[in-house]
Image (cartoon, rainbow, N blue to C red; front, side, top):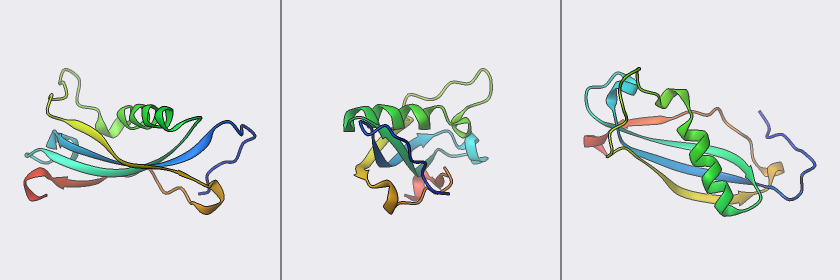
Length: 106
């Protein structure tokens, strides 16, 4: 799938590489805490706004939702490892997946 073009020249595309640490293993049927890596593409008018947008987008992902009545532990963190402005014509957008790992193995 290609990233969509639009006519808003004030906003730019950003490629964002994120890491999650100490998330409940329940999210992926594991008994121990897990971490993950993911890449997202967002459009924003500045680097700072891109950071806010990508954290909002990933934070809303249904795959990070716990069952009703459970709360995310305070040690679960989501970090932006890298964020760069990109040219849309040079980049393909992949599926919005996660690469999971057990925290004690990484």
